[in-house]
Amino acid sequence: MSKKQPWMDHFRIQSITELDFVIGEELGIPVGMPRKSDPAFRRRIAAAAVSYQLLLKSIDYASKKYIPEDLYEEDKNYLGDLISDYLKESAEILQIELKNFHGAGDETFGVIGTEITLFKIPDTFDVARMLANRGLLIEVLPILRLCLEMGAWAKTAFITTDEHKVVALKANNCIQKLKLIYPPIGKIYGYLSNFTHWGYIVHKEFLLFEDEKAAVLHASVTYRAQSLALCLLVLDVLLEVIRDIYGENSSDLIRKIQGSSDEVASRNTRALIASMVELCEIDELRRIQLFFK
Image (cartoon, rainbow, N blue to C red; front, side):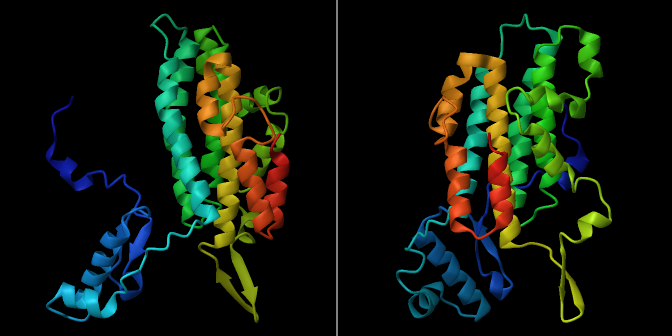
């Protein structure tokens, strides 16, 4: 391990904990905590924020006067949050379970490359999920496209014995290798690629026109729904890549994520996208649903 250098304190990695429940944002003093934090803890933080904003000396007084006793007790189950939790848990399962496929040290160069690539996918995938939760879309697409390229490269490298050919592999050229295991892969890759490279065609995706005025749309609930749906789709593809690479050995991993080790229509990813389509009146979600095999 390298010796700690003085400059490192200036670039410390920030908290990896998701602070997806925010109190005091409207007061200009946002305090974040995990969405599943205890309601009593949330109320105390809210009381502290009110006390600070009103220049009160007592947090207890602020709590009794301004904070209802049952505040935050009702835990609403929103579909978007449920899907985000599912995607996060899936990434964590992949992170743990993929290590179990590591061999005894006699792997080919291609197999080692496959393992390294698959180990990195959960981190990359989870970044897409977090950006989706911020209501972003065009920023999410290139990351999910990268996840597909990583999966395609991993599958191709796994069966490539020549070291020089592994080094020469181009991820975008490997995508078609997935067609046998996920026939709509070309359409999916094309969809994700539409806005990967900047150009005039991208502008209409975030510009709003009303009363002869134009506005830039930074984030939206529609974007969040579309991005989470695409995360479900890419996860579905990646699990089939893992099934193709590791065969029966991957059954337990797939069962933990999909609820079944078989390619059933009721698997979790398909069930969740179906719930989204039923709940939301968004044509683009129906289009994404059609990409599932």
